[in-house]
Amino acid sequence: MRVFGRFKSGGESWYGEVINDQVHFLQGPYWIDIEPTGEVRALTELQIDVPVAPSKLIAVGLNYAEHIAEMKRTPLGTPLIWFKAPSSLLPHQGTIEIAFPDHQTDFESELTIVIGRAGKNISQGQAHDHIFGYTIGLDISDRDLQKTEKQFSRCKSFDTYTPVGPFVYNEVDIADVALELRQNGQLRQQTRTSHMIYPVSEIVAFASQHLTLLPGDVILTGTPSGVGPIKGGDELEARIGDWPPLQLRVANAK
View 1 (cartoon, rainbow, N blue to C red):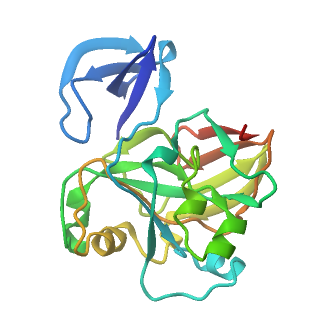
View 2 (view 1 turned 45 degrees about the horizontal axis):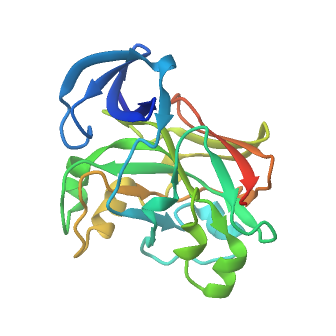
């Protein structure tokens, strides 16, 4: 497994590969080319930034049977996708700012795909050739707006509503790994990726139908059951397998 991310310090930022608690800086985004600059810094000296910079941020819904049941929905027979604003991205240890504190706003933890090779009308058999790696993502959702507006983009695209990170993992098997989310230390979501209705290969194939996926694009693959509301002062921690957790705080937007 190789580990990549974006890091910042003193007003500067870099992409890098994490090796033994050290960050080996790269010439540019790792999903384009892995070319070290030769500079190495200790991970503890740097702040972890959003590890991705997608042209498109795609989300998938209704991909776990128990979540479909808790949302009182019925299976569609195909993946349900929508677009989220890339400006909604938030890094590890960032603060989710609830846009409308009087609305029910829920957490949703998700395995997240990072595209590494451009493609259109990709077959399921070729899908893994177009995936660079995976990370942890949350799809924060304003349920009041979701119900009244009957579409998903705005209610899930407010600033800070797509936390991702802390890192992106390459050369990793995600076919059957544990996914969980804790809210203030209490376990709220728990599943395995093998329980997804549509595996990552089918999601990439479906999302690329007559739509070009570009290197760096991000796809959230859907949340399991256990979604629930957040409020100011909450602390969230999402985990996948043995990867470092994505840790977040919650506050009301000012």
